[in-house]
Image (tube, rainbow, N blue to C red; front, top):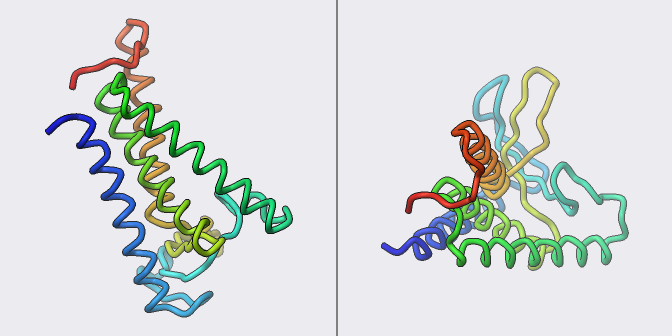
Length: 167
């Protein structure tokens, strides 16, 4: 299977999993309700975030916030698509960029259609809660980690990191 097809299939798979999981939460759990999954550690919640990661930009007026977040998401998705199409990244970078693209498209869909991103994964220890997140956020975080790991591995190898790698 050609590299380009595989990375876009990964992105599409992330997008599909994100959409399916958000739809399930929206249909099965009332907004702002939660269900305990692992006592003392993990809940399924139904929350909506009109801001960005960690509720950034929540204080900004709604119309401008939505425009800014959609425009920046479209720009990021376009940049990722171009980077993946050019195919000059290493295998690890391509996997990371594909995960980021799929996650970005999943959250972009929410912002464009409803103006808010559905979050539902709630990790906590005692009274300390990580902000609720979703499959798209997880893919973006894992993808960014893979890109950083690739850069670090390239530097440890002793050669300048060119971004090229084995297919």
